[in-house]
View 1: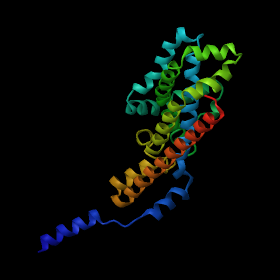
View 2 (view 1 turned 135 degrees about the horizontal axis):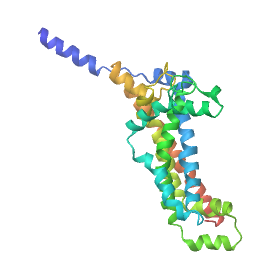
View 3 (view 1 turned 180 degrees about the vertical axis):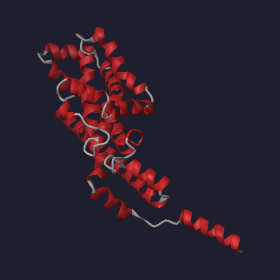
View 4 (view 1 turned 45 degrees about the vertical axis):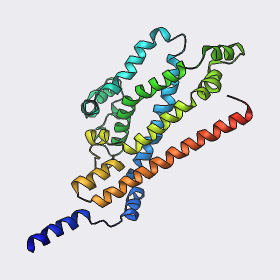
Length: 266
């Protein structure tokens, strides 16, 4: 009887679930560091979508095509390297006597040198910088492939009509690859909510929780503190936020597409 009671008690502890949704929402919103996923997504959209798209357009420009293979390889190599290796590499770059601080001191900007990963104000930005360095090459290649699918006749027609390179980019290139842009935005947004490896390897959420993101909070609650129900609620929130943003982005692009069709433009 006692053995049966022990097994029942153990089962009850593991699977007892009290909905912690209000508490989770409070924790996510009460401190600014809980919103670092949003910061990560915003910066990622700027670099992985905006900067990568501009970079792809530049490399596909006729003047740069002879050297584009070299530049493509240079930008794409980081995306092939293991994130663990990259994380360990950048811990040496960002340490107080690391490459970055030595460079700043040698160029007369020693006042900017600091322990980047040990400073609460800069730790999360160091992690985000590493993520962008790794991801930009991949999204750039997606945009290059999309741009290469645009008919040269269309680009030549725009040139004959007197369109500048900037006008051709915004009025021809961007509308023609809008589906790829949407796909990259969704991938980037989802990745922003699911980011874990970079934070865990480089800072483990420190110092003092200043680089915590939802995934690391979920991991620590589930596997360190044993709060399975609490971690499950955080996982549901990550799924909900990702789905809502993806639907919003899809709806926004669909609206733009319908508007352009109504105007009779591309």
